[in-house]
Image (cartoon, rainbow over all chains, first blue to last red; front, side):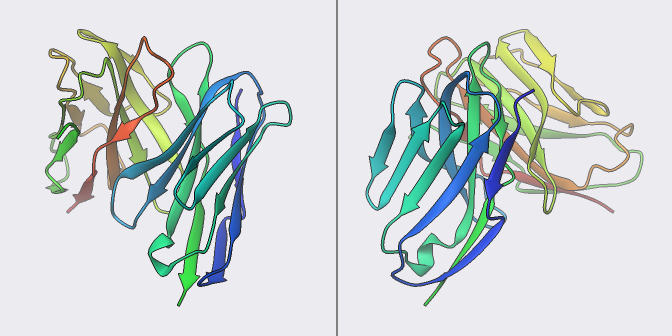
Length: 112
Length: 114
């Protein structure tokens, strides 16, 4: 059974710092991995989607990498801003069907 | 603009009452999903549907029911059998056959038992 974990559960950094969020999964037979952002009381906003054949995806200050063999993905945020404060979730898509497994999320706070 | 619309944003249910949460998408996505989110917990799958007139139970389907009569719509009914329904409910959709595409989420409905 696929299990997805995210470390750390919470992170607080000063504005301007570069940071890395981690996502680990137990079954490397995945189809894709998606990173989401969730603001308090809101739905999830898709940030980046990485196919299993890809190693990384970039969007603005965000870069997500994928290492299937080690069961890990990282989300790199450059030059963090207070507006980046939110919970970040990763979700892994299995190969056999489209249901995804979500990690518990990392709560990020960027201090001005 | 294409997207997913969930309504209402806030919903209050009395004990023993059934309530229905609406989810509509205009993305032409095949698959739709309902998740429940509780404070400090991850998303848990309630029901999902890959095509019209077909749906499958997720991990926590007890006390919930769904229908998929139209591709665009996937309403969720929280029945009186659901003993702890207070939670944040999220609807999502994805393209089923083209598995390279990820999920799109609605803005959620917060249900409270009064």
